[in-house]
Length: 457
Ligand code: PEP
Ligand code: MN
Image (cartoon, rainbow, N blue to C red):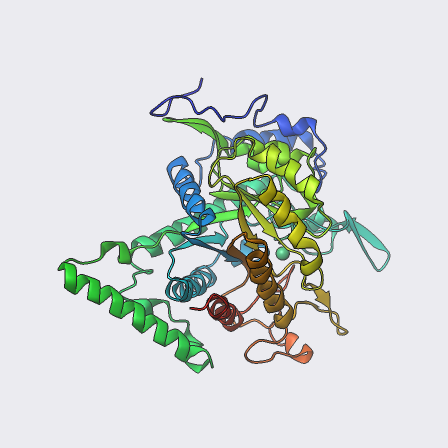
């Protein structure tokens, strides 16, 4: 049964598709669950649990992304590389929200554009890995694939994929969502009170002055409008926040794919904005098959090995009717390769007149290992890739409409450089990520300020 939405059935619903149709395709990066019976029981439970987001919110985000495609908004998407179940904790959630809010204030003020705020949270629990197995001291075990699948400890019990973790992941996502929604509904993001989102140590930062200046300017503008209109700006009380995660573990995504009253088609109700990672973006693969069928706005990571022709075929598969807001392409090339690789991809999409939102992820192409064994990224390379991305889009005549970042509101030492010029020896002090290195609070703010300077704000 398909329940009707107001108006005629949209012409662009996918053909020959079902939530499980991905199962007939090659699915990369999936765990080998040892017990099929336990998997099936979990999936049937998961498919009865309430959804985490609504179709109205999803379609609202799609409209905002359509605006961003036209240069009327800018997308800020950020959060941890991977959330962990243990980090589902009030302090960490609120400081991540704060840094994203503060960055968005800088962007709104400097770019003179509304910002679409999307967290990499409330479901970012599954990770692609370069190898299925890991060997240590002669012992070989499955790789850690994120808390949705197994646990990081190096022992058989931790590393054996456990389907019950999908139920736990759903619950932790719901707890996170609930807290984020309550904070926002309670006025946490009220532009009249930006002091609510001050992170304790912002005042000690060399960047604090510029931030304070922008916050005061926004406060003045809000009060000025209220004086002129004689009314309180209610819309300044509230900002919207959307969620995103990599749609990697397809059983989980399928379990939360639903039909809803009053809207046609199928929605992934585990998140507003799922994306396909670089390692699972093959045209004939299961991830493209799954995501082509849901009505959410979706994104695809585009790495340096993708050819213009392959990219156009992925665009065709995922957005055959060129629907506004539907498709975001997140390029992640690395500072060394972006100049040689990106222009021809932009030109190909431009030549075909396809409607996409271009977003830069300056993190994932710039990962390296230090001599003392840390996975890190240099702030100057992250900044360099972002700078180059703006310049290349300007030269080709396309538009960079957003950024995708790995960041945290905490004072971690995972990326080198930045305003405090973190060095290799600093990394040991507060390296907390179990996967990729994140920008810390100050490095995130610095990047937001660089974006607005780059755009002349
Ligand atoms: C990620 O976003 O954490 C990730 C793995 O990215 P990519 O697919 O671009 O490598
Ligand atoms: Mn990552």
